Length: 119
Image 1 (cartoon, rainbow, N blue to C red):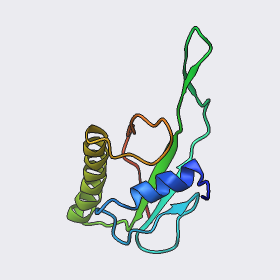
Image 2: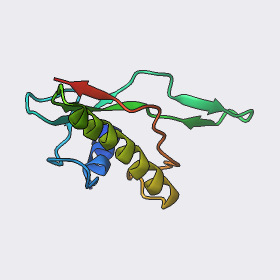
Image 3: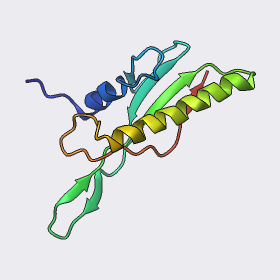
Image 4: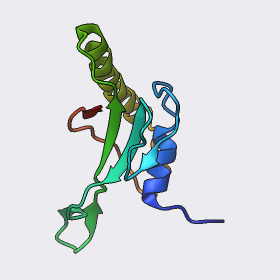
């Protein structure tokens, strides 16, 4: 069986979200398409918590970036903002239902903020 990288497993997981317009997610880049998605690894110390016995709880940090068209119409921008809120809700519901990427030992995903890239 082929071993997949953590980023590949995270990407496959997010691609199951029914909110995505085209369902395709890139890694570390956005396409020139009107709507594009990317998962980008965020550099940080992977040790989230160190225990007195020397064991650790580790973390993976990544950005999920959404590129959407910039509009002068408030309604368009509200729709874009709503996507981020809905996506964060999707993550929360999946956490509660233990629907997570197939990464060994994963406990949860935490959204820290919505992020949109306007073009």
